[in-house]
Amino acid sequence: MGELPSSLSSCTSLEYLDLSSNLFYGSLPGSFGSLKGLEYVNLSRNNFSGHIPTYLQQIPLKGLNLSYNNFEGEVPVKGVFASTSAISIIRNTRICGGIPELHLPKCTSTSSDSKRQTRKLFVRVIVAISLSSTVAGLALLSFVLFYCCIKKKRDKPSESRLAESFEKISYGRLFKATEGFSAENLIGTGSFASVYKGVFEENGITVAIKVLNLLHRGGFKSFMAECEALRNIRHRNLVKFITTCSSIDFKGNDFKALVYDFMPNGSLESWLYSVDHTLDLVQRITIIKDVACGLDYLHCRCGNVIVHCDLKPSNILLDADMVAHVGD
Image (cartoon, rainbow, N blue to C red; front, side):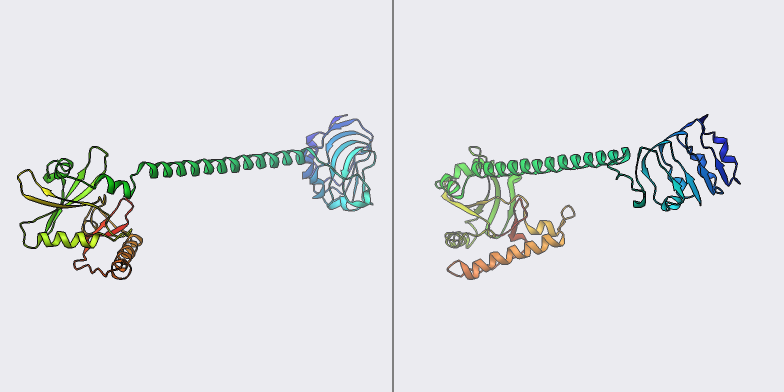
């Protein structure tokens, strides 16, 4: 009586094992699977319980009697269990499955199956929650981005508002915006003009102010020609013209300036010949396309044909999004 002793596994040459009609109980030990020489096993009329070990399929048994015990769960289908003439498993009321010839009830769900199903259900719930959270997060992000874009558009002065606010711009406002046309705000110089960065305190708008050198021969003519050219043209790849200033300075001298949208990333020249800036291939191709679109508009799509006579990297300006704008 008692549990099957584990020392039984040392009988490696054992061929016949008959332990029927005893008071053994408990499950069959795993060490029992090492008895590869067994041919006939009779464990009937005991109180063995638990699942029928699957290792019994691997032993080349010719006969196996497990009748009148308390085994439960699924009956294996391989090895000795594949032949109804080699096994006897009657009066084990909680077993199921096996080969069809045994006429046992189908197994519904074993504890292991239940665990697997619970695990699968848990995984599905986690996946569903993750997907829901992702979708909700993307929806929230889209809403925030949409709201920010709308707010930015509302807060950003439109072209008509810009033009209106600068319609009657004075020399004094330009002087104050550039801190007296200081050298710190000087962006660049050309044959006929100097360009300054200016910030208007009343609205915080940053602009580029091109001050014409009227003492230079052709300066006034250059001013009039540029005003005439810029009067009726608008294109995303041309530097946006805002307004002009035709006045006198504090010394009584003639003063003429053109006010443009400020380009934060400077000129293409500063990117091509600088150790601090680099342009990858995609950016270079995009800039070439932007310049081509701007020139196509000037040559073919703005009514009167306008020819740019000084196209070079220093006259191609880049905005905050690295969109190229043809200037000068």
